[in-house]
Length: 112
Length: 112
Image (cartoon, rainbow over all chains, first blue to last red; front, side):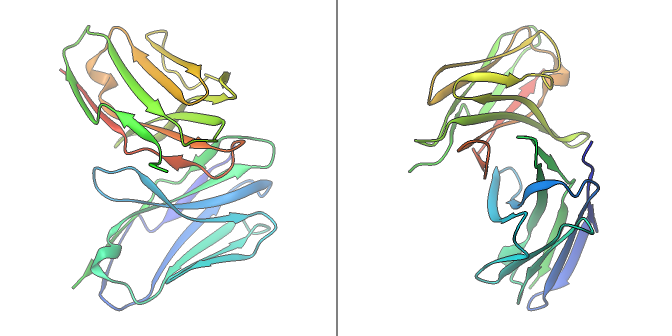
């Protein structure tokens, strides 16, 4: 069974600092990995999807890397802003599966 | 496209009552997922449909829960009778062939 871990559970940084969020998974036989953002009381917004054959994906200030062999992904958010405050979840889809296995999330607070 | 649409957004009901949650998929998508999110258990997959057919309902907690997909774009999740421990946020997500998932805004259910 795929286990997805996100460390740290919470992170507080001053505005302007770069954010580094970590995700690890136990089974490297994945199809893709998806990063989501969830604001309090809201649904999940897909940020980036990395296919298993890719090493990274970028969108604006966001960059996600994937090292399938070591079971790790990292989400980088450059020059953080208070509006980046949210919970970030990573989710892994197995290569022979349709399910997403979710991490518990990292709650980020960016202080103005 | 309006994205995934869920209704109602909030539901408060008394124990023993029937609850019906509704979801409209993104046009052209053929996969539907129902999830439940609580603080204690995080995100749990309840049931997955592909092309209107339930593929995996192993996450449905009890016989009190049932889900249908009467057509390609619409699904319902029913709880009868409801219990206080069913209180949670229920999300549906749609995708094309089980790939990148797009979540709806969720229904916050409170059973008193």
